[in-house]
Length: 162
Image (cartoon, rainbow, N blue to C red; front, side, top):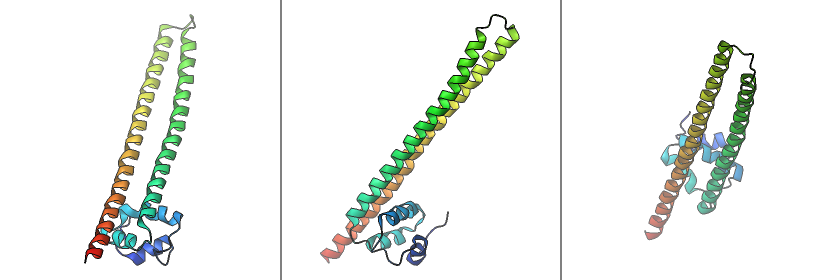
């Protein structure tokens, strides 16, 4: 992904003329671009925001909403997949109750049931990795926000002491 190295380039991408009048939507867009900004560009841009604490609150709430939405959609998707696998397993179970099946047919159905169980296990692992990524990237983004906030507050305090 492109690395933003100057404010003008960043303002052009965001479609704004100044960082002083960012809408909530633009704040969210800015937040998603943070990992692709030089630290100095991000600090300079945020330093121009009129109310950092309000911005930080908005950013944290939007990040929380994004994580909650992703988890909810993931849960729905995961549930649908597992229900589909259960339907297939129940069908195989019903077929196994047929006393007229040959030993080869029974072994084939058992093998298919094992394959479905393996697929369910893979899906569960994928789901856990997805959740881990949400926590990892969400935490990293919040870390960036807090670091930038601390730097800005440090700059503000330093400037007032002088």
